Image (spheres, rainbow, N blue to C red):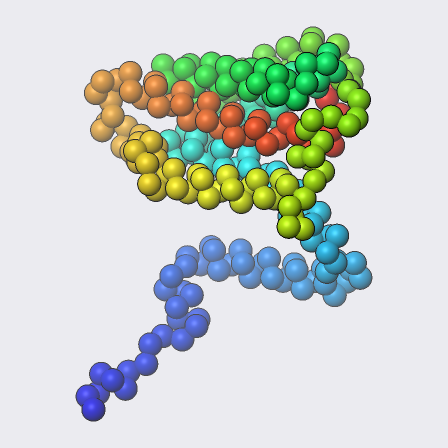
Length: 248
């Protein structure tokens, strides 16, 4: 038997340090410590209800993060109008629902507004505008529109409604928003790794010079990234807006 056959592979710690960065290992360690502290100090921490609450709230943030992933990978690290755009979209959805247009038309109307808001910012950034200045200015514009539209009042509509099942229902014991987050994450992963659009996302962010001829391609792709983020964020945020008053 050769000497190579007696050589054992790296242990668990060796594989972890080899495959993952110290930052990832440190974050996981902090998470485990916080989890242990919560389990020891809070009697109701390790309960099914608390677990569902955590994954539900985390999923909402995760869905917005997926949309921002495309913006970040494209080389644009700032999108400061997310909160104001969300408020404007929620007001649009609630106003349409309160007027009796139903879930389908209200959802379509809100998507048009969200995509238009994203396209406006994407075009301005693609033309050379500073992402910080453009998105900060858009935040102020959308805040003003939302305040004027809602008259600084809460916009409400009657229950039950068509979006309620999406915001409060569950599937196989998991909140629907968590299921949505899982499906959107899988879809985003496949799009980034398996499609031409995904490869363009990485290309635009990694090497602007590679797509600078023709220059209009950068404008088109930046606009697409911002619109995509708006669509992903609004698609699954609106049904859960009943948890948050629709006012500015």
